[in-house]
Image 1 (spheres, one colour):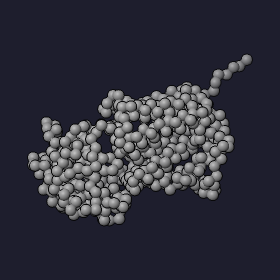
Image 2: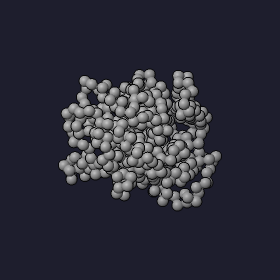
Image 3: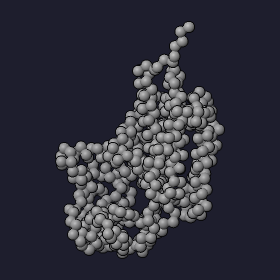
Length: 491
């Protein structure tokens, strides 16, 4: 009897499997960007929550800002000179003053005395994860921008592929067959969030691909000098002069700004090449009821007003570019808009999760083996937030210098590798219970350590406990789940 061993997959089959893996990777990156972006909307509140002991105040005087800058330069003694000196002024969302040099950052009290080193590494990691996937900035923003273009294309083609999607916007068969219910949730959420998804995708694409465009323009027009291109939009920087000089009079500049433009609110103070003859003062100020992130007002070292860049009243293109950031991150019109962005960001996560699951199911019904891909996808959906919580605990227990980006990617890769190799490890309800437990423990532990504290801290902890309850309740069976409660292969 002729017994043949198992046949090796053909080249076409291997290529198709690779095609599926690449598609899954793209979906995973989109999901990670959407989830981190949802959290970034409330980044100021997370920053307060991550480091609750920092001093807080609603306002700081110009004299105190001047004192803080002088103190920061004194702490830099013996190190290389800082090319920039930054002061973030307090506002309603983040009532803290932060001063940053090239070497360190501190929170300062209302008198301008640096008292606590800034240690919000986890919040900064979330920002980097969303903006450039923690990759080198140019390449990371290029990748994220490309994913933004892909999201816009998928959103538009999804609408065109389902002509009745608008008519059926409120037709939800949530208690129907799981496959139909999942498809309805995917289509309805996609319909309800269509304007948001297009806005986020297009503005993200502009932000991500903008750096590449600047690099190409610089190579063709300025011999590779990217600063020369950026200066056309945001203004140029002073020439470097490393000789010593008294620190620029920021107190006078702030007082002059308030007198000249009483309706604007200063948010950042930047000194280029502080303590040198060529130093300039830039004060970024928000304009109420405007979408631009702010106008940049310029002062010389003596604190005399020189002029502004023109982000508020310059060319239309310049104003449009200055408006993209707030439109993308939802930092306009206060808390209601931020909460709306959070809700729609979570909806985008659900759309990505259900859409990829529907695609995997379709391939399975067509006769392809998707067991390992499905296991990896379940790990992405529930493992990504779990690893983010793990990274937060690592930051708390090991300090702000722990390499969170490396920790995140290695842990997530290890989880995915394990579940792809052994699909039965990707147990849907176990992953949910683990996430719910992690979220609940995090909120409870923060309450025990920091106490009640200001209302933003209570809100974050309450949100964690509530989310833990919802995820735990969905562990048995929940709307939008990636698979029915099972471990391993799909149905």
